[in-house]
Image 1: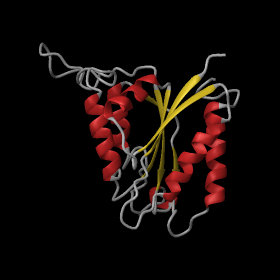
Image 2: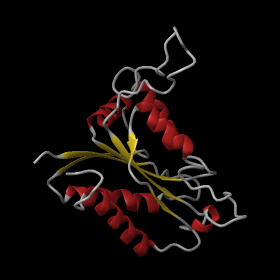
Image 3: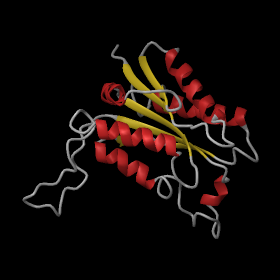
Image 4: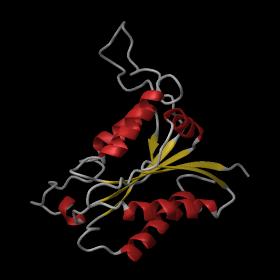
Length: 206
């Protein structure tokens, strides 16, 4: 049986009042989920630990699926996770992540974003929020009925598209500061992983 190669990234930065515990829990649960199954190989990175950008590029190139775990701070990625991406993707120029922005000098108006080198690779995103899910869905609430993926994380998804990667279904965790339901969230997350990677009609066949 051909194995699937999974690269798991914990972008849950430890900073200020944030201990990064929820994303660390997701990160460890993801590792355990795949490590217990012989049809998967796993590599992983925690952005709170020292890393070598060149070695991280190699992990991206190696993987069939990238799994990103991140909280959202002030409607963006934590600065440590953003620094990781800036350093690793820059190191990945012409070494496996992208070769150019895709345009040519003959016609620079078209084909922007088509210079990625990671076609065939997929990625999955988890995010955690203080905001409740209803802030994204109810009329008149803060995000104007715009979803996480089409709103605050739109740029993150286009970043991955720039490399040639394709998305798997995201999963988002809400109200984790004021009304956390960690057992319920973890149960929902395991069901999400089973649906994407294990079920008969899984999006990523083993």
